[in-house]
Length: 124
Picture 1 (cartoon, rainbow, N blue to C red):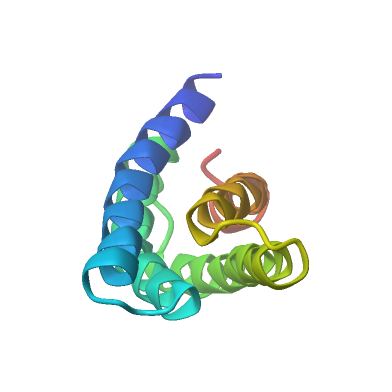
Picture 2 (cartoon, rainbow, N blue to C red):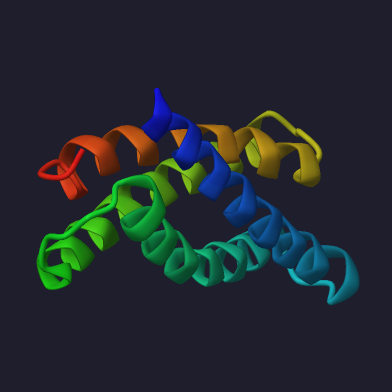
C-alpha cells in the first residue's frame, strides 16, 4: 500500500508537469493534441524514471537494465495512451482536453503494473 501511495505521489507530480506542458503546447502554442501529447510525455519520462527508481521502488539494481525495461514499459503505456486518445478524438468526437485526461488514466494503470512487476520487480 505504501508503494502505491508513493507511486501516486510521483504520478501526481509528473502528471501536473506533463499536463502543464501538454495544455501549454495545445492552447498557448497552437500545437495539435498529438504533438502536445508527445512533448508532455517525453518531458515527464525522465522525471518519472528518476523519481520512481528513488522514491517509489527504492531500487538498488543496476540502472542500465532498468532503463531499458522502463523505456519498454513507457512505450507500451504511451502507445496505449495514444491509441485511446486518438480513438476518443477521432471516433468518439470527445473534446481534446477531456480526451487527454481519459487517455492519461489508461497510461497510469498500464504503467504502474508493468513498472511494479517488470521494471523494478527485484526491489518491489
